Amino acid sequence: MAATSEKAPDTRGLAGQTIGDTSVCSVNQTQLIYRGYEIADLAAHATFEEVAFLLLVGHKPSPAELADFDQQLRSNREVSEDILDIITGIAAARIASPPGGHPDSLHPMSILQTGVSLLSHADPECEDNSPEAEMRKSIRLAAKIPTLIGACQAGRDNRERHAPDASLSHAANLLWLMTGKKPSDIAAKVMDISLILYAEHDFNASTFTSRVIASTNSDMHSSVCGGIGALKGNLHGGANEAAMDMLSDIMNDTADGSITVDAWMKKAFDEKRKLMGFGHRVYKNGDHRAGILRGWGLKYCDQVDPSMKKWFDLGDEVQAIMLRDKNIHPNVDFPCGMTYYSMGIPVPQYTPIFVASRVTGWCAHIMEQHANNRIIRPLAHYAGPELMSWQDS
Image (cartoon, rainbow, N blue to C red; front, side):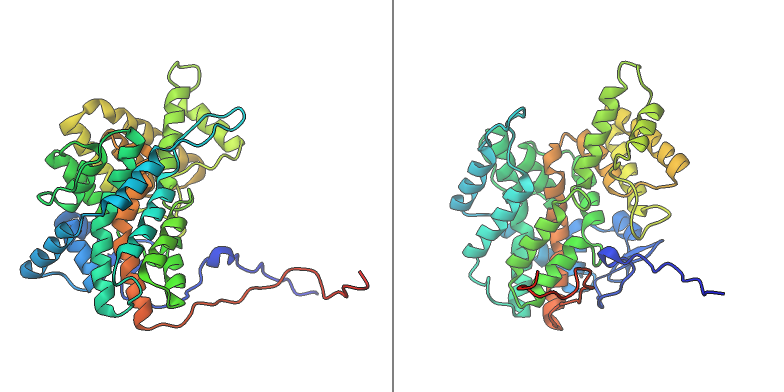
């Protein structure tokens, strides 16, 4: 009897492959741990500034260390007017309308990537990969990225830019720069929680991209630019935008009662439409960050605008159908879309906000890569034609 061969595991996208060591973060089906601290513990008891220090420096800060770190973040928020003028100008520009289409703004993630590249030219330590210089660059990048995001949104809104406010926390300053309004305590708290949840996630696509670039002995700014490019995609960071767009489609299509949410979802399943904000390569039984952010989004609605809870009601219905029919759980991007939308944050800025958080994780990984470097150069399995003669073919 012929032996039966088992189907080889699908390793496309490096699925299931371990490609290196890290002390920054651990991810498994039940836990997300930043340097020894579980994410629910951090979300309940830490601030983003404390988490940023933890990731970048490597340990929980003392009160004195935190005060110094926080002051460095606040004092490094300014960006030169020349750079901000470019960012605002690009964001305000309109691309030509394609046939049958409509004019739209350029994507904020591409603009932010340009902004970080411009920051590299203004940073005197750009080419210095020493640990001391990289720590200083990490702090400067974390401090300045919200300023770039604010300049981009000012261009999109055709309004004056707002200067960073050193009296505000990192999360509150980000909201101020994007919206031009001083945030309430609950808004700042919800944003702070979301930044903690998004700060790090081991060798995800954008972090791996950053480490690959760093492994060539390239500089931190170039590595972060690569991370932004990877995060832009809707299978990674852009999923929170796509999830909110999907919910908006469902809300609009079911508003007149001609189709139910259940019927909308069945049609999407039949058409094999990819429903964003669901599923995760590691968290097969659910992303525990999702419940944390959903809870804080609902707290915001309770305190500020109860009418926005309709989005969470819709989200709960969609989530229940996905679990019933596909046994797929939501990931953190699903409640993120609803939460940010309830707070009045423009949808195109959802992924740049992700950058304002994840840059701390990227920089921690870049420094770790440079500290014990070997160029990342995997092999490929060739699946092309057999060797041929150019003259005979």
